[in-house]
Length: 395
Image (cartoon, rainbow, N blue to C red):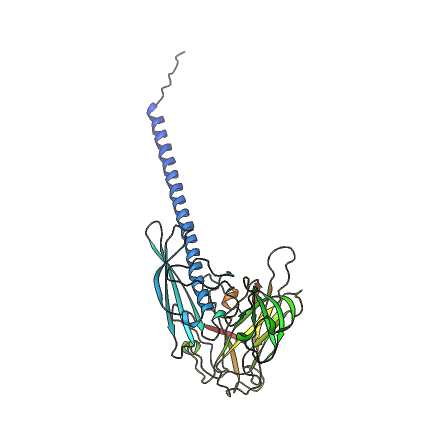
């Protein structure tokens, strides 16, 4: 029999090896590119979060320090020893003619490892009446940073959620009287900003005159503050964004009602006080803004976690009527709330004044309302960077 010889092709094995090496190289290069992209994305996310924290901290300090500190600054470097990224902060302020409302835009800029510039801008509107309650972009920080950036002033050692007019009692507590003509005083823990007591005091004693000896009987409680302002633009049927920024109509008597959707709250579950006119017909007062404060005792945590509450806050007209009731809308009003997606995350979070609050575990400020005529529409602000838009809240 004849035997057929098989011949090998050494060149074919070499080609296969080269193809395998090329594929391996392409795969490795793709994985390296993916790793670099993920690293860059992670770095940018961390840097953006840090920039938002710096911008929010600047706005929080303004809310505590008041109108005198609301001025243009920067760009100035921010000291951040724990971060290799270098940030600069710039603040721009626009005030209305009367100096009652300040539109503030704080911009934090930085350069990533590829020398690409980035910036984050947060805006808010601060009133000169109670700057501690202005918080369109509030992060959950209870105390001011220990080391402020260059050109910035450190805030005092107290929670930024305590109203600016509250009196330091010198023992780790602050006392706040929402109405001088009433006896009610709330006690705050100076560091956490939580309400820890409810006391009585003599009628007519202002916050500046409060001290430990002026407090009467006190009752311990554990509460979170909810506050803001009620303003009025009721002099015409067409309301614009300018009216939202500078409402000047006279205040009208109103009360507040908090409807809780959570159960198991300590008694009293909530209490609201406002400093507006009582029993005064609409349009007969020179006061144009009402500051309100509510203390909510949240549901105690069942097992760990933070105490919380959920619900909706509404205005209760006193001597005036809302639209949509029997008898037409002539002489009626509607209530708008200042609300917008200030942090750009696609939703209205609790600090941004939603229609109903969900799982609130910290104090909330700047939950502001605007009262307009029934024939008017809630004004929308399309002018960046500060969004003073409003949406219908009632009816």
